[in-house]
Image (cartoon, rainbow, N blue to C red; front, side):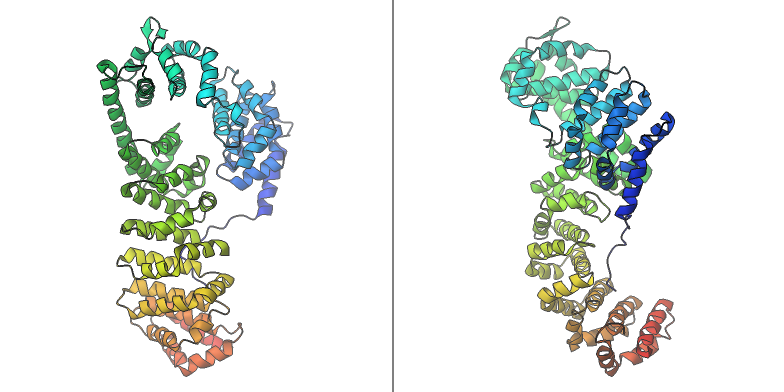
Length: 575
């Protein structure tokens, strides 16, 4: 049986998922309003981070019913809010999900929901709208971005209508007005020149922005105000020698960067080893959005701190399945990996290793975005930490992967680079490369296919490592690779026809270290298993080599595990 480096988490079969999905949809039609509400809440919990469940619910017609309940006057506000939350979660799935939502005319229904007096319901509708509007499949004309759309808003009196909101008693309202101005002024001289002369309660707008930069204001407000003033400076609306504004802007921008950097570092430290704290950080309102936004900051220090924070949070299996997928963290991460200083690349690539674990929903889209070539490139870095992370991520990628993915890895990496990594002076690089080989050489058809094209080179590499001055762990991994090869149907012939390798397996069966004896035993067991074709010939050859005598000795071993393995192997000769 082939050895893998991880124990997979079994996923439920599709028929079970489909059955449970039908149950969720049926509950939406229950005549009891309380049961309908509980059904929607249960559906909300079921779809978090589960794209298959989301797709099933959409196919089974959950969306029209949720929209109906959301718009019904007889529905309670709590039910409407839960419906909006579920629709928002469905929108966080695939692009096809968003298309399905748009086909059901979700936009008018959500916009109508904004007229509700209930703040929680409004927030749920807004979050869902934001998710839909940020999807690339949403028609562009629905979004007011870019110079043309800025002009449309400007010509329809957006500046005058939004300006008075900057004095609102509600912080959230003030922030949204401020964000509107930052978007309107971005690379738009016409709007920027107008903003300079806008009066709000007798005070010029630039002066209000400066006041919002003060230390006693929230960091988010300071940063957004700084953006507004920056865009106005670039447009020539504010003189660059206006010390009252420009020096304050420069100082506060640096201060904001320092605070964001410190906050991200603190979160990274707090969440490093505590699952409960990681959960609290992620559940804090807008926190994931802020951290993800930090990946595109102009400040290298802030970007590095944001990556470290996400890396710390990515140690959570639960969050990898849910929040990291819902916020599509992999997308900005892949951009960071394209072009960044080594200090950021090291942390970002380490985080990518976590996102490529078998149970991570991000694994598939990362593969589709060209990660194989990127990671193979990292293995050629002069920085040993990047080489380790590159090969580590490939190892996770290859775990229980399809044949095509394994072939892509071998093709992109090349056998020449693989052998360079196997002779790397860094022990971590060598161990992860051996781990990659173990995961590539799993599943009999895959083992036979790979060994038919790369068998000679792999056997040569195995021989060199077993003959070299390596520690116990390295040789144990190498013997496990041999055990996987021995589990192949045709691949095992490469061992049986190689007397040198057979003698090495025999040698390690009698080694003083139990780990190496056990690994060698796995090789022998896979070679002599009597239910497989050619087993008699292999048994005879190994008996002539004295393997049976060694098995009798090992069956008396004080180590129970080794003793049991030897007895099981001997039974193959007796059967």
